[in-house]
Length: 258
Image 1 (cartoon, rainbow, N blue to C red):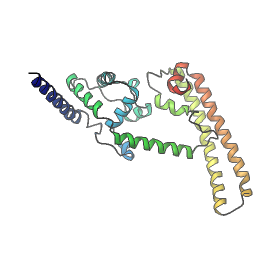
Image 2: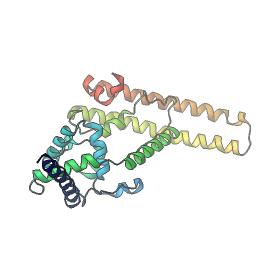
Image 3: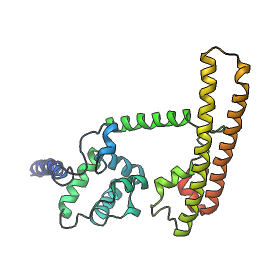
């Protein structure tokens, strides 16, 4: 009898898993691609791929029970403040419509189990990690700052990613103040980057033409001066932003500062 019960339990679990696989194709695949996406075509999607959804979800929410509770809550009552994705991604894709009346609780339980067990796949995580690494290299190469340390965060970028998140909890007054800081920061840096790029091109061209180091001394000094100015704008952005934010909000954005 015990063997029969065990066999039925195992068989039931396989059927349940297959049911989840079928349901995720029927209920989710029209918006969330289930195949591993090529990074270069991700901007053309109308919703994040399932691998990306679960990557962000597992990054923020720990434990299978909490993941299932979050999926149920978000699918039936979605809201921008609940999203685990960056706020700029939510602005791009929008908030998914509620699936009340379209997916039963039993179906959603099977879908959740399948999502948690199978996503994100290792290949996607590897691709994403490589892409982020390339982005970091590109950012370093194009940086206008003299001091370009990971310990000096880009506050405007962090705020864009977390702008609407309930855990950050920005008030309307804070948002208006932070928009002014961002505008001043981006405007100042953009102007300096253009000047720096031109001067660096002149220096590189002189070296290719086998001119003397002395011939580009003034350009190098000017680049250093402009990069120092850009660095001070960056530091002012950090100082001004953290003044607007509460201690709790700073800790949310910059846990490494704690």
